[in-house]
Image (cartoon, rainbow, N blue to C red):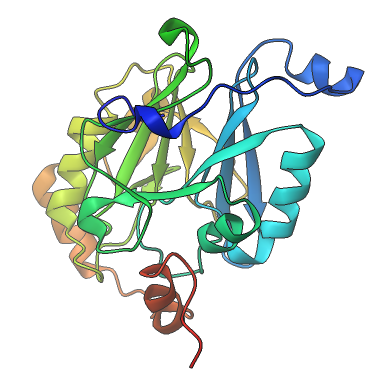
Length: 267
């Protein structure tokens, strides 16, 4: 449920029966499940409310939708939102396929991304799932605009869960590239410094990718050990402009598809 304008999208639902193992897994309440897509080293996140078992998914990949659907079913979760942090260039989003399989699921993306979705978000919006009758018990993600990798990038902060989902903006000991899709080294440096590094040091960083076998970090670690972001603003911009990166393999197919929620019309 979105506090600002989307309260009517969420309805209260009764709990389903869960196995003893799943009850144990949910005994501490809401949780994050990190999932990995091997070909593009993309992380997908299922974030779920332990009480109502409402869930949202962040950055699903079309090739792993079957896996995600199986996990949602096993855990008895009801997927409310399929959220993209930005228009991806390296893979096709699974949002459209999830919506086709789960009619109650709605796609979400930033208004400035230029992509198609059921719901458009802006800086300062909040996404809610969970108990409609008790705001204090709801799972809430704060939406923060963090342009730089693309002009439509969003970062999502789960304050009660001490977690931040950074997409391709901040990576573990790195950051997203800034050489296409309206990218800007100046903007990404400012976004990370103002919107992510201002969070408490203990907040867990959940990135959109990792290419070195790492899974999570913390805000404090990245402030201290991220060699790109410990540079001065001027040196960072110069460093990013000097990178010679290869052309993304799937960009010519992925971007047009992702502008349409991952589903190109039939020819």
